[in-house]
Amino acid sequence: MKRAIALERITVLLAEDHTVVREGLKTLLEAEGDIEVIGEAENGRQAVELARKLGPAVVVMDIAMPLLNGLEATRQILKAVPGAKVLILSARSDDAYVEQVTALGAAGYLVKQTSAHMLAEAVREVQKGNVFFSPSISMRLRDSSRKRAARGGASKVIGNRLSSREVEVLQLIAEGKSNKQVAAELGVSSKTADKHRQHLMGKLHIHDIAGLTRYAIAEGIIEGAIRLTVR
Image (cartoon, rainbow, N blue to C red):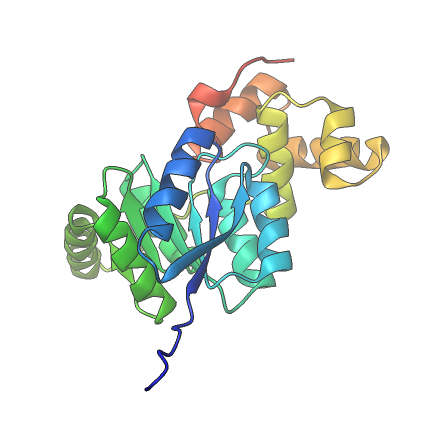
């Protein structure tokens, strides 16, 4: 009698700040049988740390994440874990976000209205090295590509004036973190954190926290709704 050969399951890291949504995604994916959720992150910084530690085949990433947004987390994960594939799953489907994560190297982009079957299919496809987009996004990307080709122009990249560390500092400031909290999150001294803040203000020619917050929202670095206080 022949013994059944166990298929290797696709390892997935879920990065989603809403616990109920994250737990639901885990249940849906693991019900497929060939997918295993090996880690869960509730903010972008934790997603980067877990990706480095666990080395998942696929990272399912939300964009609107606290401490470090999904765009910057994607950049850092793909740099730290080159073999990982990042699949964006977001309520936002603005062309600017889609084009940004595609430029960063994300393998796919799904809207949160996506069915469980399509999410599982997307995980399998990106793990194979293919790209996968929600049908509505795929159609818009084709149209946008044709229009850009006709104009000979290039698309705007969100926050392209800033380095990776500057994006981190800007997000933390825009989320209302004090200088001491920024220092703790980045693992630097308060003096260094203040230097980062001053350099950022000088580079952007914005000299108040409210102005930095408006810039972060306008550039898609944070969602306007997560801003609670302005110090």
